[in-house]
Length: 268
Image 1 (spheres, rainbow, N blue to C red):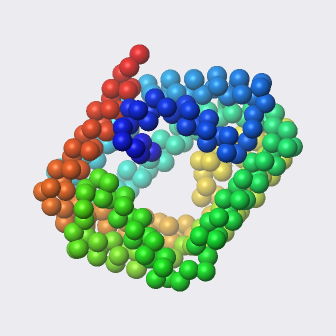
Image 2 (cartoon, rainbow, N blue to C red):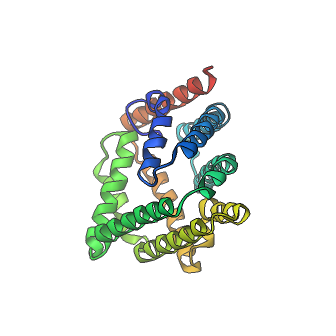
């Protein structure tokens, strides 16, 4: 969430980043823009003072588990649940402000959003469909290696092999993932087209944004649960294989992040 050279710098520009991202999907009129800016200001104050301390606490717990070598599969599951709860609270806070704005969208604005979502879906299909299993595994290897190296530095051959073994053994989800995304866009589009009913809109958005499992098939959910368990085991293995240099880097980077989150949350 806080990628970049400095969490503090990134957070100070969060309002700009959110508005810039929004503009990729829809162009607001003057009244909607004013409503959005008020909602965004309120959200940033709430998020800084109420949510950042929660992130800091969770990361501190993760750091302690890492240093005490007490990071377990249960720890991983608990962190996943906590991460989902962070997002649910964010949506619950912004929902009363964004529903009236979305409800006021014109047909042209709705079509703009749907067109962007479909364009992104097309890009994903072009990126992944048609690739054989070996190519998909290679992409997954590179993606995970990059993320872990950000925190631990250069990986050892044994760690790289562990990542490859995980991606080779894990159940494929590409087709189910793309089908889920297609269904999600379809249901989101329906919610936008029925946006004048704010009660129904709020209900639909809540399900789609905070309970995406309602859109996923039973088979997809079962595979995701198993893959998540295996990924947790991979992280435990990577931790056990970590060198003293990697552990030091992880400690330094995570401590820096925790300190910055604490400082941001305490600023007036």
